[in-house]
Amino acid sequence: MRIVVKVGTSTLTHATGRLNIRHTEGLVKVLSDLKNAGHEVILVSSGAIGMGVGKLSLPARPQDMPSKQACAAVGQCELMYTYDRLFTAYNHTVAQILLTAVDVEHTERRKNFEATLFRLLELGALPIINENDTISTAEIRSIGDNDTLAAIVSCCVRADLLVLLSDIDGLYTANPHTHPDAQLIPLVREITPEVMALAEGAGSALGTGGMQTKLRAARMVTADGVEMVIANGAKPEILYQIAAGDPVGTRFMARQAPDQTE
Image 1 (tube, rainbow, N blue to C red):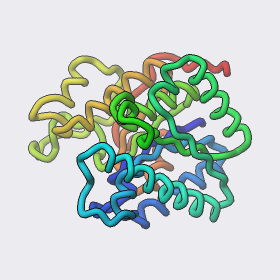
Image 2: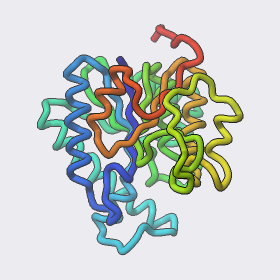
Image 3: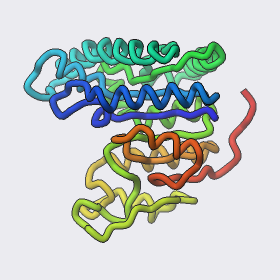
Image 4: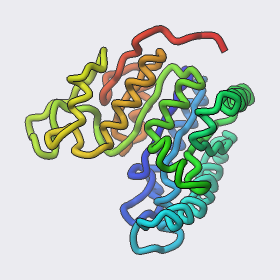
C-alpha cells in the first residue's frame, strides 16, 4: 500500500520540547519495517517549532510570530537530522519537502510537487513533509495544521491510507475526559453532520480544535477515495495492525474507489 502517516508534536517530543527518544526511535523502526515489507511510506511530521523551543532552551513555546518562526528554523534542522540518522541505521534514505499554501493552491506548483513526490517514491526514498513555518505567517495560518497538510498530500499522491497519529485513541461519542461512559467509535462509514458535531462544543470528543481538523481531513480524503485512521501514537507498533486492516482507533471508509492512474 501507499501509506501517509502524520505524527503530531506530542508524539515526538516531551512537554519540555525536547525529543522523546523512545517514541521517535520506535516510530522510525516501524516505518522502516513497513517499507521493508513493500509498502510505500510518506511521513508528514510536526515538531519543528516544539523541537526548536527545546534546542534554544526557551522556557516555553513563544507566542510572537518571529520567535515561532525562529524556533521552526532551528527545530526543522534538528528534526531532519534526527530522522536522517535514525532511518539511515535501517538503510532507508529520507527526503525533506517543506510546503507552503501556495505550493498546493497554485496548479503548476502542485504538479511539480506531485511529480517530485512520485519520483522520490520510485527511487525508494521516504519523503518527510512539513509545512514551511519559517517563510511567512501566511503559511502557518493558511494550511493551518498538519492534519490538513497530510490530507492534501494523501490526495496528491493518491494514497491508499492516511494514518493520523496523535495523543488520542480515536473519535469518541463524547469527550472521554469529562464523560467516563464515552465510547470509542471504531468505524465511520460516512461523515455526516452528526459525526462532525462530535468535535464541537463543550461535550466534544476532544474539547479543542484538534478533532475538528482531523474530521475535516477525513472528509477531504474519504471523498477522494482514501481511507483514514485516527489512532494513538504512543505505541508506534500500532501501525502494523492498522496496515493489516485490524480494528484499531477509528477508521473512516473511503466514499469511492481511488483513481488508479498516475
